Image (cartoon, rainbow over all chains, first blue to last red; front, side, top):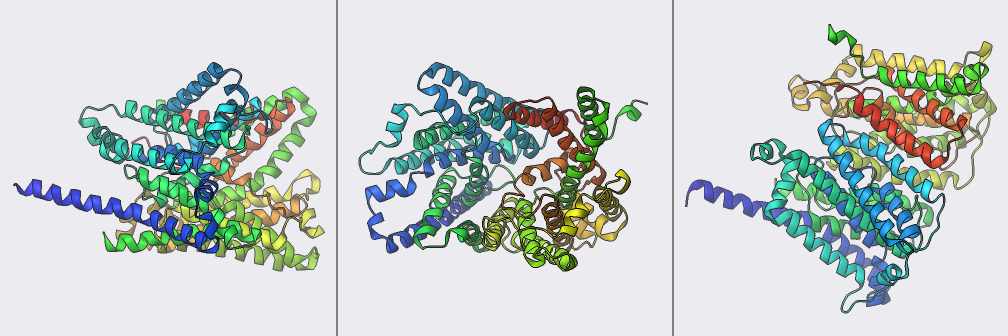
Length: 321
Length: 312
């Protein structure tokens, strides 16, 4: 065995170790939070309890995965929450009576997403300001379609979100499926290496004959599709549409990606970590009401939780440089 | 020769703002030109103060941004209104307390970034939750009234000349001077261009950035103090609009998101653009949804057509 091969084997091993460490942090936080909740209210440790606790995590999880794809490219998406809001408007208005129109509008929105991704790449624009502008555009579209909360989700969608699959509640199933799908596509497949390379090392990728523009456009389209899915599922939960329903998703999604071991430098993201990060952030609120933090301090306590969990990163990174 | 025809990036927002002012005036008559501009200057002044702070942070290097400005603004407004309890005599202590709250908040932001090694977006977001909670506990849902003298100052216009926007222009001039001619200003831009190079040149990058974050917090607090006087008190949602606006005015004003290149004068152009556009769209009686869409489209359009600050 040549030195190079041994060296790369060693590096792959260390990489795997770091991947595991990245996931260990949000996973530990999640387990600790659940332990506290179950200690205070043992009744929550049941099929029904889990369904309630994680009910709202499903749309946030998909929004966070969309954000993860954009962060993987070294960009950031500040329009994610407004886009999810727009999708809830389209879903609540058209998905029941005119499903074809709704799907056409979704495809149009996804195409627009991809188009702006291409614009960001071609003109080398700062994604933060373009998506900031986009957030106004999506909100404007949403408000034009549906000035206030309204519309109704189709029955099949509400039915799906209330479905009780065997063994585990629906949100847990979806989380596992999304995490595994993301893991195999992004972290394991050979195409995933190309996708991560578009953010981490575009020049090398270009030399290898890939079109960065095409890869980036595709990733933005995929992010749009995931955000669409988040919006549709959210409509099923809230049973109506509202352009202002999800502004918090933008920054919570970013938080979930970073919590899950992602980095803004591009190329370093973990789908499993992101999913666990989203679950952690979505039950942080429940935890605070279980330990009876007064409502006026709950937002602040969420900030403190974010600090506590992320402080773990410092300890981990000092151990494994 | 062609180089001379290329306008500086920050002039674009001034041109667009001028076009909007002309369009509004053409629609509602020449008589309204003065009052339209006066209103845009007054509202724009708040965006400029908070934007100047955001500029210091963004110029400090790639990834540096302060998402806590709206909650610092609100918290400082609440604290200072609570200190003054509506008495004119307490004006100076109120202002000092507001500025101290802002500086402390900015320093806390930077310490979280430095010690916990968090990305600035996450660190300032987490702090903003905490600051928001403090403001909520201090004032609750109630609106705290400002002293009459403060309210009078924010709208004071002897001989038709508004004093507050004039003071803010002075602030812009000071920012230009600091960035161009002081050791700290040069160090800030150097750290923004290349942190390793600045470090090798003997710049204490962490100290320079600490001051940038503290300055950003202070200016956000000043905005809160003035805004509370202008709008009749501190309210919980008073800062919300400034999260996106503070970033947008800085970038449209010609400051590079990558850091190392700041433009304080350009912030005025972008702030006037934002406020004149709101006035124009209101005058044309355009629906809220379309108004938002046009706002977003114009932000993207301006950023897309403006030539790059760094051609290389």
